[in-house]
Length: 456
Image (cartoon, rainbow, N blue to C red; front, side):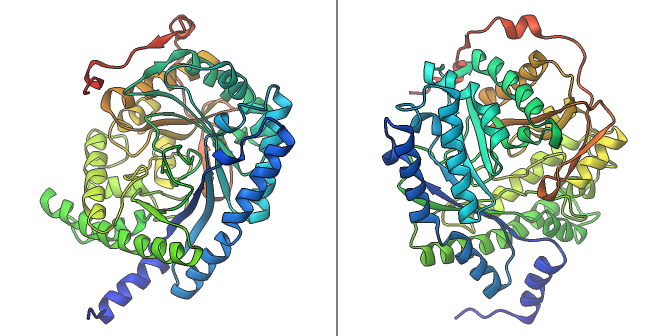
């Protein structure tokens, strides 16, 4: 029988109390395929019934586990089947989509979950007429709801990149910014554009319950930049071999805690346990920063030469350490680099050591992509689409997930800042390249899949 030493107990306690270790999210994925109906009102009733049936005890169970074991569980969330599929038989005008969205939002509030994700469409190979209607309604949907999150998958390594959808997403972001301008354009913080999106991602705003998933599943996202940072203090001045081993060992410990929470919640809720997402997700709290880790590795400031290499090292070692500690690893897994949610990233932007272009380079090796970046409110639709296109192609060519969650803060200019509160933090407005890509974006059409996608 294994015993836990006093030293191990103290170490674990300090991870929670002093180093910001937490289970960032328990996310219940629920299939809504059987709720489809040709009548909008009946669809809304079916969705409400299904969500209440499976998720009524989600928050209660998560809180019980947290209280019993002293493990902070920060967010309780739900992901659902991409709603462009579910709404296809009945939604023909914008008001229909808004009605369904408000129903989902109301149920989520009733269940007391923090977010519900899945107001999503997958259009990598092209858009149907329903997809176009669905996408066009997203700004209104996000302006009329509070905890509902939306995503659009515009590209994949197998399908290529739908440039018509990329262009439309630029407009969605601009329109959403305007409709939520009285709250720093926060609607854009609930909208993500993806390439190679995964179906079991527990993190918002991009979570959805993929159609290849089962009826219901419980996925867990663990975090812990502060714990990794503390461990790296013991490896100061050591070579890279020692550094890598240190990260791997602490990632193993972090993941075991997430595995325990996931299995315990699965048993109590009588819901199958899916995956552990190993992502290092920062918060605005001091000491809970991925940027701090990179600087501890040896950078004067994030954005300095060597930043992309250091991030690649961190991402790889986190995965290597965590994968041995979990029964099933999935989701995104790695290190997130959201600007507004990471005080170290914010500091680097303010110091001008970190630019939008350097962030783009870092997304080649990080867990996702350009995340929670605030830009001037007068940035053109075409420029936003161009930023999306660049990031999507990084994912498509490199066969990885990439994403863009960008906020053109209405009425703000470079050097200003916007505050979103909570885990979303605050963000300095980053300068955007002034040169136009309008002619490029206006071409429209579809960019075919890269040659290395043909592996059958």
